[in-house]
Image 1 (spheres, rainbow, N blue to C red):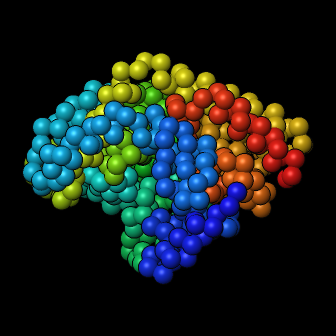
Image 2: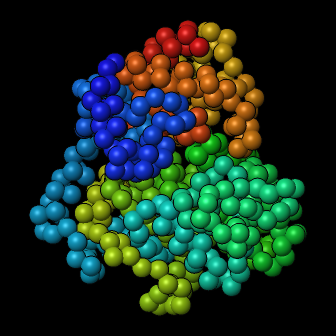
Image 3: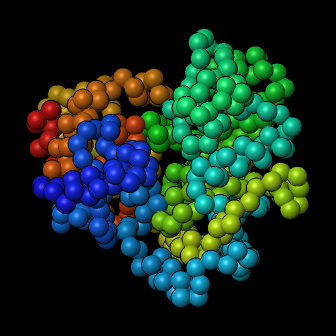
Length: 428
C-alpha cells in the first residue's frame, strides 16, 4: 500500500501538534513507521487519505461496537445538531439516557455524565475519597485509567511501597497516595492493606484489563477484591470505560456476577462522541455537588449531541438480545483462525479474549498481568502489525492494546483477516 498523502499530512501535523497527534499511541512510536490518516469509515472498514481500505480492529478504541457511521447514531446526531449544539442548561435528553443506563447496569441508582473516560475515573476517585474521608487508592500495574495525575504511577522498590510518578508533572505528593498492586494477585493487595490500615479509600481496577493487551481476571480475583473491600470499608471501583456495554448489557458486573461500588464508563456509552460517566448507588452519588460537598462540574457535560449519540447506541444494544452472543462467536472464530495460522509456522503465542475483546501476545507463557505481558516479543509484533497493515488489516499499533470486535464484521471479513495473518506469519 502507498501512504504518500498520510506521510505528507503527518509532516504537516508535526509542525503544529506535539508529535503530530492528539493522543500518543496514534503516532506509531511502538511499532515504527508513519501513522495512517483516516478520511472516512463505514461499517467494519476504515479508508485512509491515500484511498486504501482496512478491516478495522481498533474501532475507535472500543466505541464502534455496531460499526462505523451506524445509521441510528448518525441520524440522532444530525437531528439534534439542527436544534442547537450546546446550551449549558439541563435537557430532557440527559434524563432519558440516564434512566436507560441505570436500568441496564446492576447496582447503580444514579449516574453523572462527563466528557471522557479520564474525567470519569478522576471524578470517581474524588468521590470515593470524599465518601470515605481517606486519601490513598490502590491501582494495578498495567491498568490505565486515563491521564489524571493519580493514575500515572509506577512501582517503587519492594513489594509494599508508595508509588512514584512515571510522568514529569506528577508530584511526589500525589504519587504517595497511589499504591501499586499486581493484577490478578490478591496476596499483594492484602499486603498493601496491612501496610496502610484505615487509609485506603478505594481500589480501582479494569475488571477485564485492556491496556496490557486483553487480560481476563483470574478465577476468584474480582470476588476477592470485593471481599477485601468489604472487610476494610473500602470502595471498589470498576473502570468499565472499555468493558461497559461491550461485554454485556450490564458490563462486567453482569458478566462475572461481582458488584462494584462505583463504575466508570466511556467509549460505547457515547456512541463515538466524547462521553464518559460515573455511577453508583444513591447514597454515594448524593455527596456530589449540588447535593453534597464533593465538587465536580463541566460546561459540556451532558452535551446534547453526545447524549443523542449515546442514547441511540444504548437503545440499539438494549433491544438486541442476540448481540453479545454474535460478538463472542465472531471473536472465537477469529481466535481459532489466528491460532491455527500461527501454529502452522511454529510461532510462540498466547491469545487472550473475553467477549469481543481479544489480543495476540508473542510469547507462549500465560499472560496474566503486566509483567507477563511485557515478556512478549515486541520486535515480532512490529513485523506482525506492519505486515497486516499492508494486507489491509488495521490492528492496534501497540502490543499492549486489546483489539475490539464490531458486529459489522462479516465472516468474509474474518476469513480475509485469518488468511492475511497466515500470509504474514510465514514471514515472521
